[in-house]
Amino acid sequence: MRTELNLVLSPKEALDEATIKEVAASQLFSSPESINYFRVLKRSIDARSRNIKINLKIEVYINEPQPEPINYKINYPDVSSKPKVIVVGAGPAGLYAALQLIENGFKPIVIERGKNVKNRRRDLAAINKEHIVNPNSNYCFGEGGAGTYSDGKLYTRSTKRGDANKVLEIFVAHGANENILIETHPHIGTNKLPKIIEAIRETIINAGGQVLFDSKVIDFTIKENSIKGVVYEDLEKNTTHEIIADNIILATGHSARDIYELLNKKNILIEAKTFAMGVRVEHPQVLIDSLQYHCTLNEVEKKRDYLPAASYSLVHQAMGRGVYSFCMCPGGIIAPCATSQEEIVTNGWSPSKRNNPYANSGIVVTIEPQDYLKYSKEGPLAGLRYQQALEKAAWNAGGKTQIAPAQRLQDFVNNKLSTSLPDVSYQPGVKSTELHTILPQEISKRLQLGFVEFGKKMRGYLSNDAVIVGVESRTSSPVRIPRDSATLQHSQIKGLYPCGEGAGYAGGIVSAAIDGQKCANAIAQIYFG
Image (cartoon, rainbow, N blue to C red; front, side, top):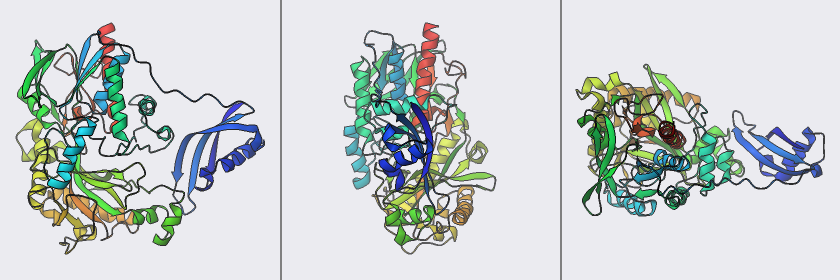
C-alpha cells in the first residue's frame, strides 16, 4: 500500500528517519517495521512561536518494495537540421526557451553578449577588487543570466504562470539537489549553479543547437512588420554578422538597456511600467536567527543545529506605495551588480549552505510611472533614466568607484550621518553617507516609514548593528515590451517574442524559465498549427 501523510514534528525529529517512521506508523495504526520506504514530498518551517515546528508531507510504502528512483532526464531529439529559432539571451528565460524549442522540434541559436560561466568569474573579480566593470560580462550579463552569480532562488511556485515543477525537475536533471523539489523556498546557491548552467548548455549543443558567447545583438532585421533576423557583433573578433530566422525570442533580461534604446530608436513599441528601487540592508545573521526563531543570541547556535539560517519577508504601505523586502539572502553577501562603469548597483546572493555571517535583503519602494514621468520627457524610457540617475548619484557619493554609500539603519531613520560603519560583506567597500542626499524624497521618506514599521513587526530589526547600502535599483525592468496575450508575439512585429524579466513578464528564475517555455510553445503552436 502507498499512502500520503502530513506530519508535524520538531526540527530535531524532522531530521531523524527513525522518528519519522515511528510517527507515520502511529498515524497508520501500524508498526515502523511495516514501512519499507518513505520519501518527503514537501517540507516547510512554522516559526510563528518559540515552539518551532516542521511540516512534512511524506509518501509512505507499507509492505511494498521500494520504488525505482525517479529519472528526471529528458531524451531530447536531434534538431541540428530542423527550422531555426534565434534566442537572444542565455539567462533562465533564454535557456529554458531553448530546451523547450528542442522538445518541440526546433534548432535554437542562443546569442549571449556575455561570457560563459567559467570566464565570467574573472570579470566579477575585476568588479570586486579593481572596481572595473565590463559592460558585457558582469553579475547581470553572461551565461545563466543574473541568477547564476546572485543566488539561484527558486521561490516562484505560481501555477498560474505554468509548470513550475517541470522547471525544477530540469534543474535536478542537470545536477541540482532533489531538495529543491520539496522545500517551500527552494534555493540552489551561487557556488552550485555554474556547473548546472554548463550542463544545460551541453544539453542544447548535444541536441544540435548553438550557443554563441561574446555576441551582442545590435540590430533587428525587419521587413513589412515581420522579423527576419538579427545583426550581432562578435565582441572578441570585432566583426559583425547577421543570422536569418523568422522567429526570435527576445530574453535579454532587465538590465539590457541598449535593447530598449534600440527598440525605441526603431519605433518598435515599448511601454513604461511599475518597478521598485531602494537600498540593501544587512544584519548579522545571528540577529535575524534570534528574532525569527524567538531565542536569545546565546541560544542561536543550538537552534541552528537543526534549522537553516533564518530569512524574513516584510511589507508595509507607506504614503500610498508598497515598501517591501526583496531577494532576501540568509547567510549571504552583497554584490556589486553595475553594468556600466559610472554606476553603483547592489544585489545579494548566498552559497548553498548559507553559512556567511550576514543576512541581507533589498528593501525597496514601488515606483509607478507617474512618479518618474514628471522628471523626464522620454516617455517609455523615463523609468530607465530615473534608474540611471539614482545609480549615478550613488557612484558619485561613493567616490566614483564601486565603493558604495552606506549608513547605519537607525541613523538613516533618524537623519543622522553614521560616524562609523560595521563590517559588511560588500567586497568593494562602503563609505559613510547620508543616503537621504542620494535617494529621491519619495523613496527615502517611504523607506524611513517602512523601517520603523518593520522594527515593530520584528523587535530588534531596527538596529544600528544593521547597515543599509545603496542602491538596490534592478529589482525588475522599468520597461515592458508589449505582446499579444494569445500568440505572445510583439503587438506590432510578427515573429518577435518578448520574453522573461527584460520584457516585463517575469520576476525571478522560475517565472522567467516558465515564460521562456511558453514562448517556445507559442512558436510551435503557430508553426505546426
